[in-house]
Length: 231
Image 1: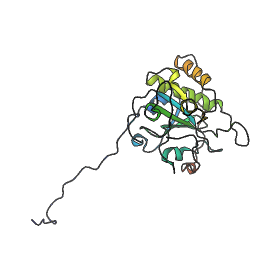
Image 2: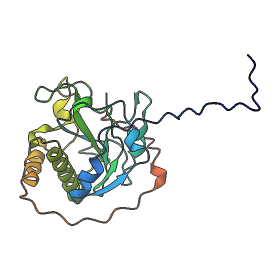
Image 3: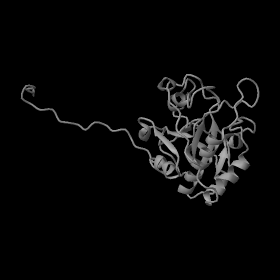
Image 4: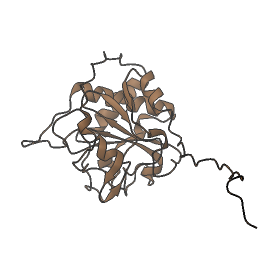
């Protein structure tokens, strides 16, 4: 049968909607802890798939970008030539600002084990903090008090949300196998967990919020590679 296209109406099919992943609570939890938060466009539907049960938080440093607040934001969001993004759910700028990148699973953990958990991408929320990762030489970068304080408070807030103790925060260097495969983050994780636990128990008063640094939108492409991310 011929159809008279001039008079017939075509059915209206609903447009496919991108899936919203489960970690949509991240910015609210961080803001409630008194932290600076920037939500990246499209973060609620960004991920490699849905998360599994969140057991804890994995700490990373970017290993790139010697200047600027969060120059690695673009590559964490979009990935590298050898590894598709997103590469972590959160980024942490040098001024203590959290950038919410993804609500789904991210390629940040790789092969490893922390307290019997071997599916790091599915069970750990990843945080990529901007730091060169160098401890000596011309690219050496010390961790600022402002950034470390925000790091601890952000981790503490997430762990409280998922009802996990401070021991469920691990460094990529602690999780990754074989041992020595990763060295991030460069700070002492035992001391970091001690401070996280103190914050969770309410023994550390809130620090004053430091004004956010100016963010150069030209940094967004993130052309350098994040050396510490590996699925």
